[in-house]
Image 1 (cartoon, rainbow, N blue to C red):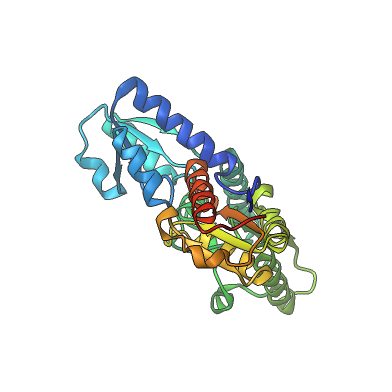
Image 2: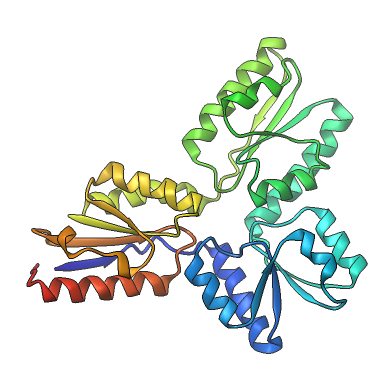
Length: 297
């Protein structure tokens, strides 16, 4: 049996950096509070908690003792979080993804200019996502968030617009909504300027086509992800569209040997929140099961 782990899956560079910062701090200081979920993966969360990390929400911050160390995850935070930390005397370890940080700066500049020139700043993404909350905060809470077509009624016709995307947004979905926004703006004034900025992380934008190619080149695909990961659910559907023998699992214990009947190759992939050690555990389990059942490649 040929067993391959998708080399393009797993943690993106922003998450790798955040985890490394957390591990380094835990090793040197022993206790670290993480503001929100560092990674949408229950097993990686448990591993970090076993090292001493404690996850908190923003409303918990004021209960922490002065001098507490708090990790800002890769999604970033609005300026109000940094101000609260300053007032309370907390030490922040800022693990905001560099790609997100650049976008925060762009959104802030665009929002300030929009006030001067009576324009509108629009961000395409998920309203409840932590990255979006951070971006809107940097925009002075003046940016319009468009998640789907139902939000298009809030776009102002005839008013110049600058459009950005959440860094993890689906490229096709962004293009569709951006085109509709442009039409709405031009319906009020054909000469109104519309700047479309597809600020999607390059690692993310290339992930889907690579995954489809990987899925199509194997008899069976095991997609490893936490069920709560929206990125995982989206990528699983992409793999499934390329290979109907794609199975969604959270850990190696969910694998069924019947899935590999008559298969000669198995591909293992995962979400951007799936740790490499978990993918390797799955590969080992597949190897054991196929050997026990006499499968051959």
